[in-house]
Length: 336
Image (cartoon, rainbow, N blue to C red):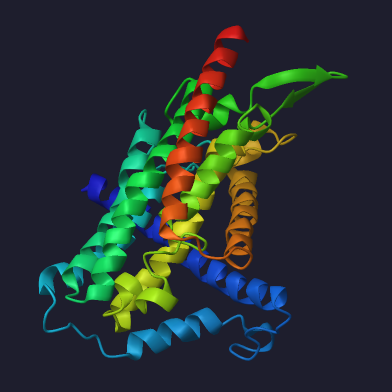
């Protein structure tokens, strides 16, 4: 009984982090994109600055009729958005918010992380295949090609981090970034992996992460100007809302992963280790906010790539660069 109670509490806490985080990022995207285009953005919902606009949009979608096309595979069509949300939810299980603030610290945490993150793409494939719509089918096939192409550089960039840290535990990876590099005037200086030679790995991981999220400039599975709404074309009501929330919750989880692997996670210099359980979550949230801003900035700055350009970027540039990064990391590990 204690096991099930503990499990329910952990799930509730993860949802308490994931869903509000997604709503905040949605609001952030609305306001940031508006300012980038010299617009006001949402301004009335909930009072000045329109802070309740994401809630209003969610309520609007939930009131719409939930339709299932006659040609759709009913069971798979209905299950797809839940698979997407499940994949996003599962990544938060091993993200550490402090030395003791983690749902489950796995020895193979990085392996688990890369495995469950693929569930979201599986949900997209299910949605595209089951909709009985040619636009949805093309969107699903594009998502499959994108997964195959960009899962490899994502994994290879993470392998370099595991090599440098000497562990696949996310707590261990954070701990490796707190080790002293040099001292100045009796003050020990530690650096995150981004400043320990993982600049290439960081860039590769962020670009591949954007492709995994199907965000512009890698939004070919949706591509409104080409495929109406891609794999989302036949979805409405609550299920469309779940896909919409899943995209932004995925942004939060990807930003948390990037922050943990390359930016030290919850750790910040000068804070007593005993205080990290209090300060750590705030530090991680600040780093996640910065990475989410980068994701939003990319969306409203870059045009959509062509399909051949997307594949060329992955196979001709990112994967070779990731392999070189692993070799350099291994040499540095042995030499230093």
